[in-house]
Image (cartoon, rainbow, N blue to C red):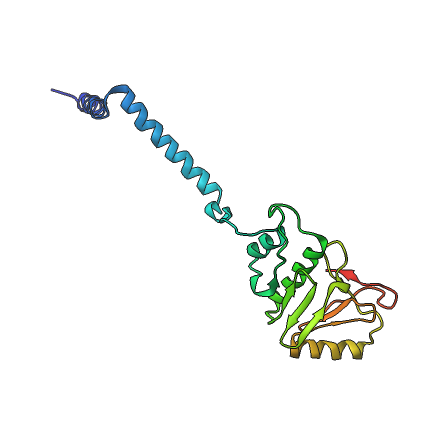
Amino acid sequence: MVSLNSILTLGVLGGAALLYFKYGGLSGIGSALGSAVSGFGSGVTQGLNRFGNLVETPQSNAINPAQRVTEQLDLGDYVIPSQEQRDPMGLSSAFEKSGLTFAGLEQQFNTAARIDLTTGERKSSYGVQPLDFTFDGTGGINTGRVGLSDKTLQAQRELSREYGIPTFDTAGNLSTFAGASWTVANNATSGGSSV
């Protein structure tokens, strides 16, 4: 009588022989195993990198760093770009960074104004408002409430909220924007802080 062990052994050997001839000998089996291992490695890599294709940057038509940042942060509706041609992969100037920071506020509060990155002006249906005096020189915006009483600041907040306009303190710092305000320690003596 033939044992079950013998039948299983013959089945495994027969399956191995079938695979050997189907894949074209040892080289064919090696290729099949290699591609399987490669596919497994690729799957593991993609599994570990959850963001996968999301980190790929599409081709850009930017002619300077500020335009590249505008594209990346989707600020196009809030910026009037500079037409100065520079290496798009370089660094934006401090002036441009401040303008882009202000454009980020415009985007955050969804206003209908645009920041001109050449002149530093805010252009809206209410007119043109120069902003370059509030740019801090390092890429931020000076904020504060120098010379503003609590009542004045509250009135500014209401105007700012209703009309979507920025308001400023007596030192030229941004005090409110679309109803939001920034407080600074020692407001009476402080020149403001930077956003």
